[in-house]
Length: 253
Figure 1 (cartoon, rainbow, N blue to C red):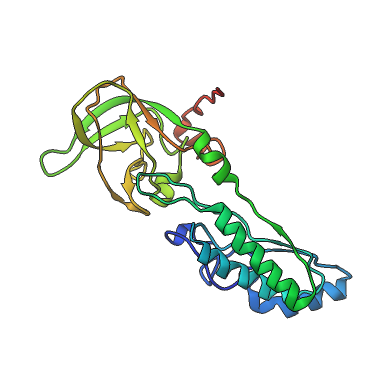
Figure 2 (cartoon, rainbow, N blue to C red):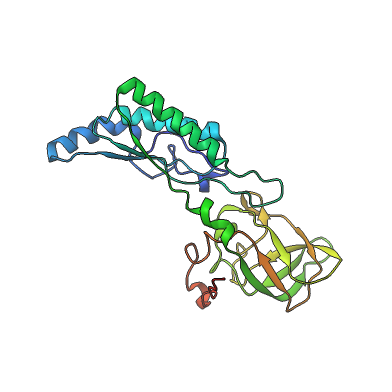
């Protein structure tokens, strides 16, 4: 079900509300139930997913919306509130406090049971929260170019949106580190190897159209660059085969 609202850092991370195509619009519940009855179908599971975030109060609102829909669906025994549980990607970033979020969920379900006499089973999908920190992408600096005093210094890498689409799609931020011993720091824009100006690995926060430089160790061609917290996004979220580039090798340690 689309409950009528969404939550995300930008429109590309918002999967509920009038601008999102996911799920059945909440106002159509009576029609859906009538059609299911005519077809002899019992709807006993409900899924509501509005986007990504970390604020427990926001997740409480999402639960309220989901439970309000479940109240109209007497055969529903489980409610899935989806995923989107945030991790901390950069310094100062705040991850979802899962114990607090689950406490909010528990209280909402208890209140619903007291009100309706129905004890629903909760389902969540915390995939990225579990695995994002567990992987990193290591790439080589293959070129260093600049666009003059009014422009930027670019680190070109031998990876890009074919392996790691998230920055170009969402303006997502990921910690980066040049794997050398340099004590000098330089402002760089890190880019991929695809023939796309959108193949930027250091976009402005939540703005895939913008650029934000990163202060990194002074790099040389041939140095390795580590991009952190990519465990949920590479093989499972890539433009596979784009520009005929091969897939990055996966190594488990």
